[in-house]
Structure formats: structure tokens, C-alpha cells
Length: 640
Image (cartoon, rainbow, N blue to C red; front, top):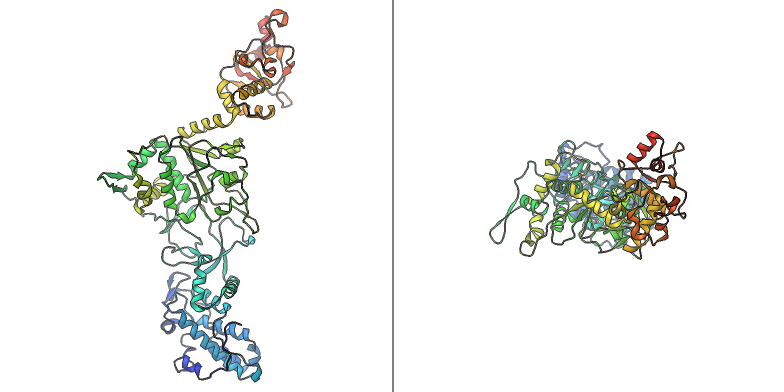
């Protein structure tokens, strides 16, 4: 029991607390509040839970009044004989008599509830021995405050979208009917619940507040955060992307946050802002200057829209890329961050995805924006990154706390001045990367710092870009890939994958019509060692699999046998001429054995005897078809 007076109950204090009328507080004329209760407690006639006038709120079954509690104590005292039983019964009846809505005078409500309890305990004491009589409570118990707060406000235990309720991640959250966070369930651990509780008991200590939270958590409704890929919680509405319908923000749409930007009802004019030098900055003109290619501008707008629609599984991670600094990509990121709002933005660079606690900050975030990545960083482990990009379940590890599974609702954008370096060179990693090229460079003479520091943060600029991304663009659920993006991906592969770079360098130079896999692997290893003495090359099987995806299928084929395996060809029948490409590296045994011996085959020339007799490999498609048509081989054709 918390805060009770250690002295006898003063019977005369109770009627006085109710304005001299014994049953004034318990008037049966207003058992659920109404005008009299509103005047008594200073409460507005608003149903905060439903967001409608009290007259329109759903009528509930009339609850027991405090009068009924007192009568029960008098007529059947054995039914309410314990301290906790009386306390809960009085508080329950008191809460039923409170109108649902905002609270104007918490101290007044506290005092009236304390007086009601004093009356109940005074009545119960008439049926108890003097040594067993209850003492009058001096302050409200945590359970009582939890009941009051739950009655007056809409409070729920909300599980963030993507989390499993069974993992204990539900957080107490208070629905905000007005103000900056209107339409959202505001997290109680940000000090909001403590503020509400201490209105009714300013002296409650840390232990008291923890018990209040436990009591509140036992009482409130448990709800997951609403996850629907086409519903976008903007600052002033919920926008249904599929239908174009604008819905009001209500408690039924459970969200812990909304985006910081209003969505205009009609298309706004292009924002224009006066610069300090008297010239005019035009948002569209600036956008065209930073992103000069029309198809890339379309992609950037789609990316802004994807940040607002992160419940869509986009399957890709845009990388804002330019080898030059001062190119505008940082300003576009700042614009995006301003549209979304800092509360929903994480900042996890590529190097952190493989660290033990690197993913902790992505929970309940909608966008990951990274302006700077470590130069030259080598990404050893990319499994978590790939999972986050495709919204697959990942394990979140928090320091000194249990780990848990989480399904991200996060759109990921990285900014880089060089290509990322991943150990993972699989197609699964490659297809997740979307390079957005920023080709221009702004010098100190042309650079306007006010754009990034001021203009893109203004409401009219944010709203114009949000409208373009969500409303003006044709509906899309997949990001486009302009020519500059495809070319950048090709350059990325060449720069980061030696097999790709090798084929890009030599693929069109080979003169032979048959290229054994072993020849290609040996030549690749020799070439790569010269280019990068400390580097290594993958094994022949992996290199072969990768080359099969790189060659032009209209130029080269790998014939299959009846058993479904690659056909082995006789080198004597299919290697009938020299290969100039090998000459530069013929000092390497793995290359020399595939070279040409002009004195072999009775001076007609042949591959060296150190070469295998048969091999699998790529055959020039046209040549293979011609020989198969007549049942011949290149060797036979030469001898004919």
C-alpha cells in the first residue's frame, strides 16, 4: 500500500470534500459523466478514443456507481472486505463515471477519488474491529492511476510493424488526437507516460512508476502497428496509393510515427525562393541541373516515393554515385530526409551491416539514408544487407538484451564516391544494387549552400516533391533502370570482379572457335596476377559458372550431351590454329600448354603434348552448327 495517513479517519472530512452533500459525487443522474461530470472535473465532452463528440460515441452498458459500492459494503461487507478489493471497486466505479476525453484538472480528479476511497473505507471500518480498521489513503496507488489514465486516454501496447508480438517488443503508446504528433500513437517511454502518471501522483518514485507501467500494460489493448503497402501515413492524412483516396488519421490506423510532410490536395505550383543576390531559385530547374537526364530524374522521384512507401518490397538498394564531390547527391538526400522526417530515418553504413549490433537502429525506421561510407571499405559479410534490402527477416542483437527476429520495413539508400567492394560477388548481390549517377559538379562559384541548408527543408518544397512522387508519377511498384544506371552497373562489375573485367578485356579478341574452360582459367590467373600481384582468382568451376553468364549466347555456346552434361571435345580435332591472345603470357605453364606448337602433328602444327587430350569449353555457335550439319570437325575440314 502506498502513501496512507497514519491516523484515524475523520468522518466529517468526507461530506465536506463533496461540497457538503454526501451523495453529490455519486449522483445517479450522471453515472457515466455527461454535463454534470464535465463541469465537475473540467473535462471536455469529447470521446478521445473515437475522435467524435461524446453524443456520437458508442453507448456502453451502465456500470456500477460508487453509491452501489457503498451499499454493497453496508449490506454484504464480506464481499468487499479487503483493502485491495475496495480500492479496485471504488476506482472502477469512479472511472465509469468519468467522461472519456482530455483532462483539464488532474489534481481535482485525484482529490475526489481519494475522498471517494475515504468514504468507502470509513463505511467498511464500521464493520471491522478497531485494530483491523483501514487507514485513509494519502496518495493514489499505481493501479488506480493506471485505471484513470486508461480511461481518459487511448493507450495501447503497440508492436512495431515487422516485429513478432511474442518477442516482447510491444511498447506502451498514447494516441495523440492533436498537436505535432496528431494521428499517431506516441511512445510512452519518451517521458509521456511518466508525465501523465505524475499528474495524479507527483510524489511517485521510480518504483511506483514501474508498478504503474506494469499495471497499465496488463489493462490496455494490444495491437500491432498497421502494415499495408498502399497506405502512406503523411503528416495530414493517410494516402491510399492504389486508389488515390485520402483518409483521416484515426486511432484505428495504428502507427508509431508519420512522415513529416503534408500531402497537398491538389498539385501545388513549383516552389520559387528569392536568393540573397536577388535571383530566383526554382525547385524544378534545380532538380534538372542536379539530375540532367530525364530518365534518371524519373528514377530519383520514384526513389523519393519508395521512401514513403517502404512497405513495398522494392528488392533494390539505390546507391547515389559520383566520383566527383559537390555533385548535388547530398542535397537530394537532405531533401529526402526532410520529407520523411528525422524520427523515421536510420543511418547504417554498409560496413555496419556485418557487425554484431549494427542493425539495432533500423527497428521502427522507414528509411536508411547514409551520406558517407568509409572510403575503400571491404564488405566481408553482406548477408544482413541483402536481407534488409529485400525486407527478409533478420536477427536484431541489442547490447545486454535478448536478440529477436525482425522483418524490416526499411528502404535503403547509400551515397558513395567510389564503387562498394563486396566479398559477395554473386548475382544475388548484384541485382540488389541500383546505381544512380550524378554527373555534374558544382564549384564554389556555382554552389548555393542555402539550397541544402534551407530551401529543401521548407514545407512548400517538401510538399511539391512529395506530390510529384506519390500522385503525379504513373503508378509503379518497381524502380526503373535508365541507361546511365545500367552502364554504371556494368562499370561496377568490371571494376570489382576480375572475371567480368577479364571477359570485358579479352572476350572479343579470341580467334579460336573453341575455348576450353581450363585455357580461360589459366589465362585469367596469369593476367590477374600481373594486374594485381597480391590478388587471387576463384577456382575453375566458379570462374566457369560466371563466364557462362557473361558470354554472348548468340556468339558462344556450351554444347550439352544426352546426359545433360557439357560435351568434351578432342583438342586435336577442335584446336587447329594458334591463339595470339595467349602470347603475352606463354611463359606461364597454365597458359603455355594451351598455346600452339608449329612443329606438332608432322609440322602441321598442334597444341603441345602437355595439354589434355579432351576438354569442355565454349564453342563458337556458327562454327559448331556448320560442322554438326556435315558431321565434320575443324581438323577434318582443314585436312580435306
